[in-house]
Figure 1: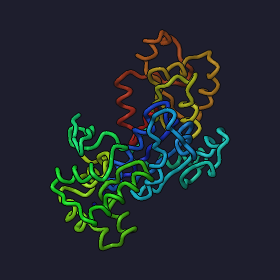
Figure 2: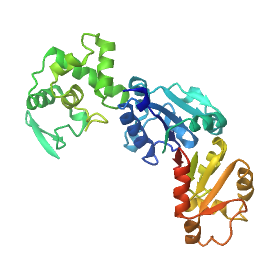
Figure 3: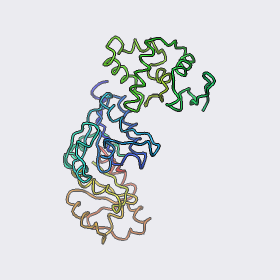
Figure 4: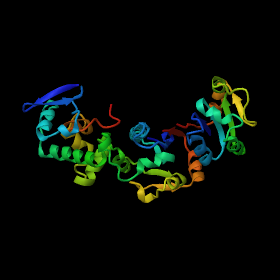
Length: 123
Length: 111
Length: 98
């Protein structure tokens, strides 16, 4: 695929994992997008940071635990994961609490990154 | 929904023949599904099927074929981590066919 | 860039998060987000502060539907559906916040 066909896609995740289906749907769309060799970034803001929380155990709610799938993203060549610093801090979380390696950005840096995108999909 | 009968037990599958319940899987069911796919399970076939089950156990998804090929190359060596080898084992697509035999859901993004 | 917000600023963080992260450009308030454009609420000062960095627009039919179309915060632009389309075409990218 030529460089001209590569667009910058950003997926903005702002919902906690199990209360609504947005988080799971976003992840599925991300995995499908990976097949098209695009420049994909995942962003976790507000309650979206809870998607990456370590130690999720969903047996009791009889729902699939999709958090391990975030660790598969590297194999799909999706390596740009960004978390907003303020969202983490407001929830008393640090990078240590997250199950994958991420880049932590402050709000302004996150906004600047958004401005660089060709397509932004919000979940 | 439809069913398959293996050794007197009934297993639920979807209309394409994928097992509905991951936990239903066992080697006999795998052999049965393989037969319906015209695949004769050899040691090499089992190696891929076992790899897929391990991958699913770790990541909770069935990998896309490109990802599977790369991951197999990493674990089992480049002579196995290439699409020619995998398509020889599973002519109708390693991700699709091997996933079905491994009792996994259809890989995300496969249509 | 155009940011489209459709959630009420009371009970949702969406608008606050947008203002916190986005660097400027157009913000369009639609559906339940239009309440943010009405004067006299606890959020009026937040909107007025944001007007220094953003061009804020509000969809008039959504205001009217909710009975709050008579008055909007000074500096906020009311648009109709045609204006909505103009905003989308004028910006290279849009983000529909959920």
